[in-house]
Image (cartoon, rainbow, N blue to C red):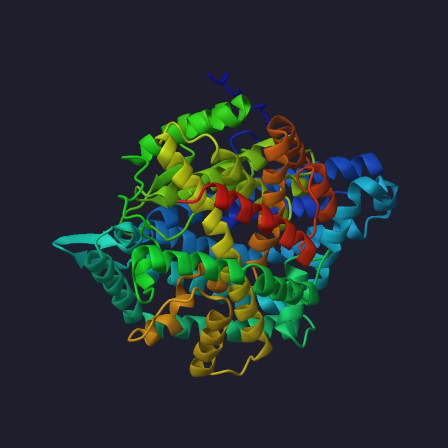
Length: 573
């Protein structure tokens, strides 16, 4: 099936000059002031002003995002690093009071009450919350945090090892954990572990500084607990800490037993007395690792075919992204870790960043980030710029659903047997991810509930959570590696309390998967309908628009895991 070409709608500037440059404060500040000083004499003028604010702040945001993208694509490039640091250190802090003045002008405008209540309810709630949390005294602290985040990413991006005569990044080394030769896996794992330990004290120091700054930010905003501030900052209007803990407990009861069953099956099939950390990725039947592509371009081409089979329009959108250079997929030395989709707000276009090294997981990463990209494109015609982005809990439904929808169309990468094997690995990965997510979420709650803790106490707390939620592997002799293994989870450093969103969204994605098992075409139609809403409605309504429920209670979790268990049995190796 060949997708028709995607021709995106143009959204030319209506207030800003077409070729405006917003690289310096001298270029940016006068425009901010014009918007702040503009008289608003009617509801129509308010709506025009909102359009112009969105156009301008989108253009400013795109300048900062492009610098961030450039830095992560090559974090060891001094020029890119300097440009990014200039933005977060010298420009962004100066702009924050302007943003607050914009919020105040809107919230205090007498014509705001004449706007349609249903249409602007979510926007009003968002703007009021941001004004409530804003404190000018926190700007310098937020700048210091941004610099620490940059340092963390630079440290991880610089990690390499020498393995059998060749230099590898740690991401590239992950391939060797799938090798059938056990000594090879152990050697690779130990090399990576030792390399990470070299920066253990440095990373603990960075995190300690982050904790101090975050505590100060929360107190400045009037919160005795940073947790309460963080929940408000993350705009968790539809659930709270109690629901998060309940979700953790449900995962412990429902999912952890299945993980233990899968690991015991793995141990037996591998013929081992105990599972070691380097035994968790290898194929249990001793088959060679899945290697779905030879290069980043090969991955993009094959994944495009999968998108076309899911929906021809999605395939055309991804082809457009490839043509426009909106992808950076290959891992390399100096590239920041992880994967993300960024939105270029002025262009209303997505950009996908990842670290592909040729493993099966890379395919899922690209499907995942592709789902985010399709979300961006689905909502790009939304007039109110704030509504072109949805809450993270639903953004991740967009991405995780695409992993599950794509797993049924893998013929471009695999034989039928290997396609089934990849599908099973995806489902097993979901089952194993949920307890890990619960551990990371519970860890962050513990960290901020005990602000005076020591590094040793923090390590003990992490170990206890791994005992509760983690895979039952034998870490004897590598206890120091286990206690610091959370250092790899960049969300803990960069985005405090951002992780439960993945768990909530995973339950939404599994519901899309359930729907697709019954009526695939209808499920995809509903999925795309939900994406097109952007962030214009409250979170439960976004889920509903996609044909699913915003529900992460134990009964819903149990129903979904039972279906996954059934499918795993059907795919039994």
